[in-house]
Image (cartoon, rainbow, N blue to C red; front, side, top):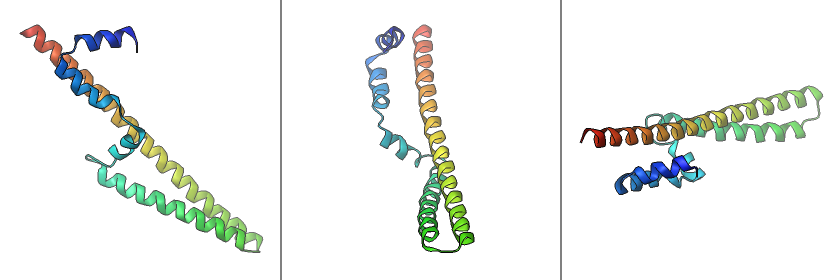
Length: 124
């Protein structure tokens, strides 16, 4: 923690510090679950289902690629496996971007709270 962080924490009231402490100990698991709440929650649930389906398709394509004997079929099944894994990777990137968006929004809300408290303190 930097000196600036300590100075901000000392300037906050006990109520503000308790409010901000709720966000301090976010675990990766709670960050992932946070993507399924809010305005985009239904879309994220759908994307998670598609992600698991694409992983299943990847396993199925790999299984078939090892069980066929024709070179053409091996190439086609391997191409399907590649496309399925690319889909999984792109959907994971989407989830990471959504988690980072939530983290940034939380930080902006903290700043808004601090600015509102400071302006209320200066006005009063």
